[in-house]
Length: 358
Length: 256
Ligand SMILES: Nc1ncnc2c1ncn2[C@@H]1O[C@H](COP(=O)(O)OP(=O)(O)OP(=O)(O)O)[C@@H](O)[C@H]1O
Ligand SMILES: [Mg+2]
Image 1 (cartoon, each protein chain N blue to C red):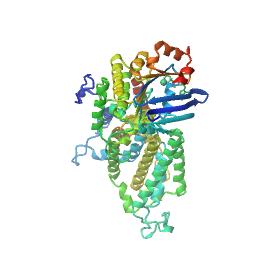
Image 2 (cartoon, rainbow over the protein chains, first blue to last red; image 1 turned 180 degrees about the vertical axis):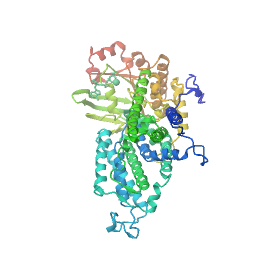
Image 3 (tube, chains in turn blue, brown; image 1 turned 135 degrees about the vertical axis):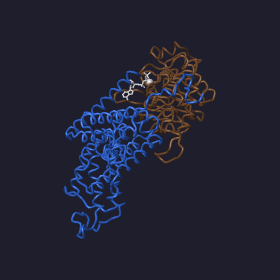
Image 4 (cartoon, rainbow over the protein chains, first blue to last red; image 1 turned 60 degrees about the vertical axis):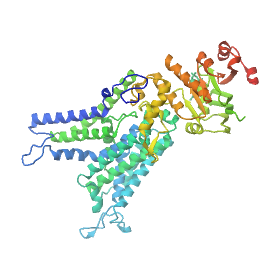
């Protein structure tokens, strides 16, 4: 009686007919979207969105476009991984974009070279202390420290003062942005060491994004931490009565989100070879949108990193698709807004249907 | 004194102005099964929440297993050996059956602190074994319990208490949502517990069930214990009289 194809107590159960995973629907949406751009491209532009059309290149797909799609979402995608586990746990994090800004500024100031073209680096913040040409581990640790502290404050506020996550992280959003601007009095910080610049070079952001996504998907599916995220997001009282240490768990969730945002900051500032106070503005909303589009429920308890990764690809396809169709960036923003609201409406609708069905 | 598993003295809980529980003196001996009865809002669940550390009492003392205890939370109570089926079930809708059964005390393959790797196979096997005892019908253990019937959910909660070794089991209206067959099965589980000498507090509105299963009946009314009677010294009408307040039992309480 213990085969998986049989239920407990004699109710029959057909394992082959189990419901589709929610991620499958999201993937289907991605395929349809790509198909739509392909079709519109062929009909109106005589060009392919997905496939290679240049004669002198030997490739099936338009690899350049595919790379751009994933490259432009990978940095926000790193944030979205952290945001996903926050939302699954029943919270929200509005501070990640500002954490990117503050971390980029602070970490970059520890990654600067001493001399540029034979002259002393005019923009090195700590040249007077001799803190230049530091090994790459220093700015990395500084960055992770920034994310950790920000996440710790978020988590502690939410877990111990019981203020809503929306408010706590909104406060952090404003404060961290202020720190980003204050750090160098609005001046950009540039000229990183070669080893720091290597972190975000080429396809490195994609590799980092995918590795972290795999790691956190495994954590959510196979560890106690992941199980407790879903449990708390699903029914916090039940989780508490079952003995899960809610406060500790929440602090850890926000700390991880903060650290992931700070990793995104390192990758972004390394890729751009500069840090600016305005970096990461609105990233928090893009990250939340990727998660929601990927099927993560804003009311907690449901979703996955795989879903969020597919959600981020949908995001990338939309941006690239609009460029491909030579539409202005304004339209991108408008459509992005519509899609975010649409995804939330869909989630609400799914929940209502569930409630009635139960 | 040594055969007393649980004892409360003047246990009191006020919610602001609501005196939900007042000066409850309660004793449970080794191997004893006691029922708590009383109208809706009489304070039965409140009593359970104070014992299990879900809430902090306003006043009074609790002894468990020979020691005075002050549980800071339900985890401490559980670690001390009190297993509880709460009236509101304490299940997470978005998790599957094994995850709910082992919520908060998952079996792990490797211990890596919070990132310990779960032993999903072992939890699944243990879940199947536990559920077979309740005779519940659950088609697919790995679907979330959101869609499950009230009875199926209840059986998951009961299977949870029966799975882990304990010194005291508390069930708050365990059969309220169950069908005839499942109710009979839960009652069988309770009888098994009795045979094994495991003490139990059963909260129930079902007179037949109470007289079938327990040794002693305690009646709550308006936050106070108004009767404490051995089964052979009372009958259904008598209990109803205490529940409704037609009879007030300070005299018997002194004797008990
Ligand atoms: N958190 C709370 N805040 C305020 N009042 C409460 C709270 N919890 C319970 N009460 C009140 O305390 C009283 C006792 O409630 P309790 O849940 O213990 O009743 P009960 O005997 O278990 O009833 P039932 O048979 O309906 O389960 C009720 O009047 C209830 O409204
Ligand atoms: Mg109750």
